[in-house]
Length: 306
Image (cartoon, rainbow, N blue to C red; front, side, top):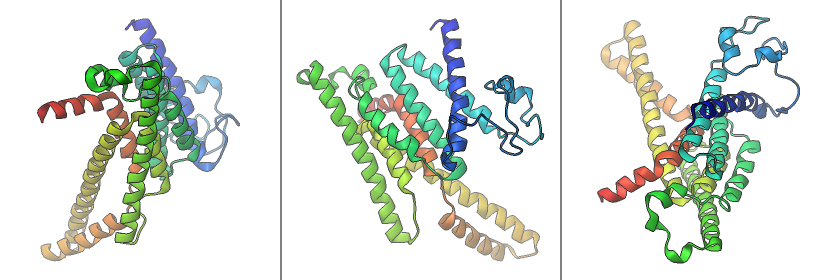
């Protein structure tokens, strides 16, 4: 990778990250991402162009609005940096190819959905539905699971290597991946609702999983579901444990006995487990990005170990 070109790709990613921040803020509110110009969410002061430079502006202003001095969320800085790193990683892995463009589009959409879900518990249709269509269209020009064909050349039989045949195979894998991903989450949500009496996940997660399946194909979709479920479970258990420890200390400080403090803390932890709305889209999106880059390596290692 040429250093100058790498810096240019990273800078381009920062600019797209700045636009992605606008999407994360405005799409859940139903606002246009084109107009009006960017403004402070606290005082409404319009942000001039020289204060709208990715990363640098946030650092120069020390994370505060120039007019009202209210804090600007670090999310703006994090999203810009992550998008820049995403662009650079896609270029490093794939070069200037359609596969790199596919990687960039998928990562851009997932980063936007991850941070939107984390902040608002919403996954806007304006990102998920076009993403599903783009994933299916990309399958016609970039083989789904392209890394698998490089790591395991024998994966595709000779009969499937024709120009038309691989496109049909790729499109089929994209459609099947979208169907498998959406069906699995829809089924899991229905079972959870019937068993617990509360909604475990929204329909936005189902559409997000269809997007992921359309880009990744069946095998990596299944891996994403498994990995995100594991990560989400660990996060949930950590949250319950943190609540329990905090409540135990608070009850003990109030003079309750150790047994009574633990009993009351457990009641609080159970309520947190029951009613806390976990942004599962964060784990689905995060694991999908990792699966796109490293999923086939993990699967190849797993198959070799069997």
